[in-house]
Image 1 (tube, rainbow, N blue to C red):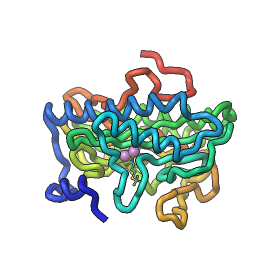
Image 2: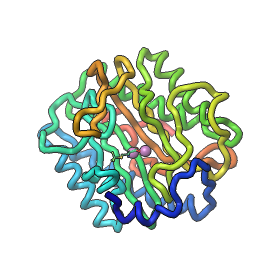
Image 3: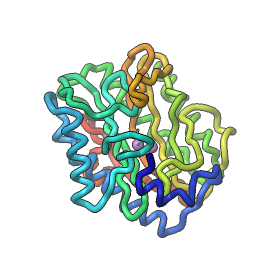
Length: 278
Ligand code: MF3
Ligand code: CO
Ligand code: CO
């Protein structure tokens, strides 16, 4: 099944070539990504024990509608929700349903709004009430992995520098990096070249150039990295059922480093954790 965004973007399918965007592309991404960031901000007070992930998904859909944006996941390759909600040992692509969140859960909410054809893709972890210290540590480590990956982005570096920064830190913290899913080029297409691996070595992968736009979205497990996809065809869980976390930003490569398009305007990039300085 093809939704109208896919039909629209069919003529510019992912060919493996890495697109370079100019000022209009960066402006388009700022707008789409900031809408997504504002939605993720608005969810912070909503994520509490008793709320269902379907209620969260409905909020995301209506937030999009109210702001002239379509959720990119809706009817994407047969996916029928406006968000992904991945709880505890769910690594990614958790499907919203009618089960209430419970005190102590950790949930990733992943939203992609399409504004004027630009895809704003971002996700954050939300603690549900009070969470255990081990869960809180996993969130801290995973967010730090994302920010270390972002810090490695500059023209002339290779995509492998991002993966190396993430893997080195995660494993030093006795956590593991999920290999089965990666970041991706994003812009006029939802999932484009290049693949951004969250592990590897700095010498590997294509060279980064000014104007590239992609996501970094490390999935980090407290246990082993291995994945199982459930029979619904989407929900990816850790095989050992260990806790898993993920944060995602969309970034654009600039002359000196990168611009993070999906930063929270309210400083809520790490809900439930102490805000970062600077
Ligand atoms: N937003 C996810 C990503 O970060 C993709 C979700 S696709 C879906 O790339 F179909 F599972 F929603
Ligand atoms: Co993504
Ligand atoms: Co996403």
